[in-house]
Amino acid sequence: MRNVEFRIWRGDGKGGDFRTYTTGIDDGMVVLDAVHKIQAEQANDLAVRWNCKAGKCGSCSAEINGLPRLMCMTRMNSLPLDEPVTIEPMHSFPPIKDLVTDVSWNYEVKKRIKPFKPRKPDAADGTWRMQQADVDRVQEFRKCIECFLCQDVCHVLREHTKHDEFIGPRFFVYTAALEMHPLDTEDRVPDLKETDGIGYCNITTCCRQVCPEHITITENAIIPLKERVVDRYFDPLTRLFRMFK
Amino acid sequence: MASVDLIWKNGRFGQTSRRDAWWGESLLVFLGLGAFIVYGTWAAFQGNHYTHGPYLSPFYSPEIFGDSAHSWFGPKPAWFPDWMPFSPALLILWAPGLFRFTCYYYRGAYYKAFWADPPACAVGEPRNTYLGEKTLPLVLHNLHRYVFYIALLFIVVLGWDAIKATQFDDGFGVGLGTVILTVNACLLSCYTLGCHCSRHLCGGGLDVVSDSPIRHALYQFTSKLNGNHKKFAWASLISVGFADIYVRLCSMGIFTDVRFF
Image 1 (cartoon, each protein chain N blue to C red):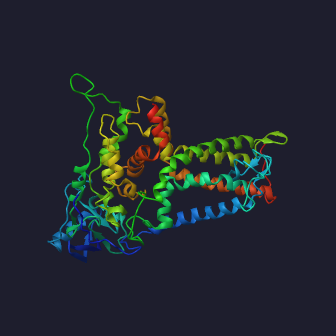
Image 2 (image 1 turned 30 degrees about the vertical axis):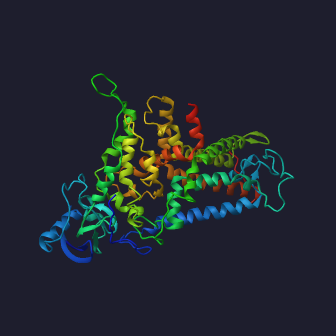
Image 3 (image 1 turned 90 degrees about the vertical axis):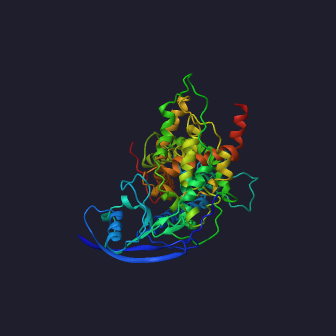
């Protein structure tokens, strides 16, 4: 066992600061284990949201040494332990208490996105037929666990607080899953341009870099959606071609 | 939509809890792109030492007007204004330059490296205002596909240059310059065909791609190239600069071209 120093942000929506804790770390521990140990031994009132401890529920999102990560999937031996390990709540959302943030804004955004609207069934029994080639692309997007780490790292939300004008990478992935679906008939392109703020994305790829499910957010979701916006609004040749098609 | 009250907004430039060398990648991009822009600008204004035997520097190809044997329409035309600096490269370099400037990969890279927007992921920025690519001038990046169409013509021309680089005075042959120009044309093709715009036009814009077998195959091919777009972006940038340096050194007599056969 090795003693490691942690700097954990303690506070609420009005503010807070870092407090230092030192605890013993065993082989194989993840950051969430250490936080639970500190909670049990030194800070019973430390608030932390968690559930599955397997990287599938997306509850324990936080910033570890400044980078958005899942606490349950960050092994202690992957961090430099000769200096304090810093743990903070996500910066893009209002803190409730300590490491717990209010992510309800995301659920409000999701309600706003036009839902799946399939074409008429292909068969008399009310079922559809799809080719695997057509659903390959959208299956990647279904891996999202809604941990909101991509929302947290996106500088449009984090630094520029464009929450009222920009839906963030998570919901571009969600929109892409619907918009590219072979059965879907809904048109979300005008919303992408006008209300979802896709033009704010300047392709930093930070969202893709922090995704614990390794979804290629920027290249497979956001840029293809940007290209669909270009088709509709910025490419007269494509529009002309569509007229004569 | 519910407003969000954050307590971490308006951080200082460079403010972060990151412990790693977050500035490293942006610094490398700044140095790499900066060096290329400085060298490319210098080379474009030279107007000489851009050919050697069958080799033509990619900075000067196609040579629309110029004094070399590679020129399509002869020397500098009489109608060209005297007050404007003339170089065959200045007539054409705007196209590949704009293609890279509006490329999705480079945009993300130079916003960080040259504009600190952001300087790196989860690092504080120098400005509080932000317009993104939603309004002028950056909304013009949406013209990327138009320069993509022009870039396609360039890879045809550079491919032809690579073939012509086998036609020496004494007949067919292959020199080190032939290999360099051929590799350069291949890398530029992989970069151009693998761009996000190409991927979209080939099939990415379709929801049901299985109905169009040719476009599906093209989409799969461009998607494979697109997966390595960053690598091809850098490899082709280096190769195009290196090809110009090679032709220039051979032309100046500093380096003697190696002839394999």
